[in-house]
Image 1 (cartoon, helix red, strand yellow):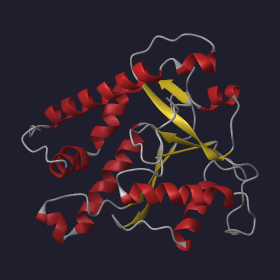
Image 2: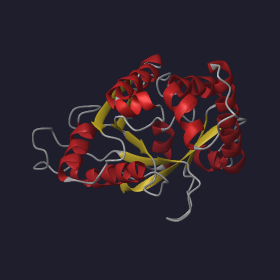
Image 3: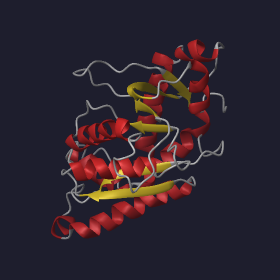
Length: 255
């Protein structure tokens, strides 16, 4: 939806995907898996006209270090308008099942304030204002339940969402069925695998609309008919947008 309305979009992976498979050939030659994962991710981004970048940190080795924090500061500062950075940064919450996900979120949050500090990474122009940071929906509760501040109808983009997911064949058709002990539930054909993931993500998006759809009324002041949605929580770090800015930051009114 962002690309359809003409926004610039950058998709970032911190890790290289080198441990995301069970096949012995990838265990013996992890670089071949890195190449495959990067090809899949770049293909997904390119299909919608987005930019893709990976920081290349080995799987399972994301840590909050000075080097990684500085890399994150430079990464965020360098996208968008020079001296302002991006309008919006989307990420998972720091409460997540995967250690790399948790530390990635912490790196982003640690970088947030430093974006506006000129002496920090002075080789990359500091931001004159903070971006808005928002978390996508999850079901974790140990750090507190997810709060739906924004709900975006995604009916128009649902098919494209499935397309993007299915670009990552090594992850969604091979690794995740193995790692989640779903062997036997996934067919060998890509078409069959796509159908399973399509059903999974459509059901999740339907549940999101059912659970949080009423939130749109509070933001836009009007009712909206939709079937699928994604929800986001505005982080306390970063700029705090007013309700009218939320409607500009998120493609709520695109459909």
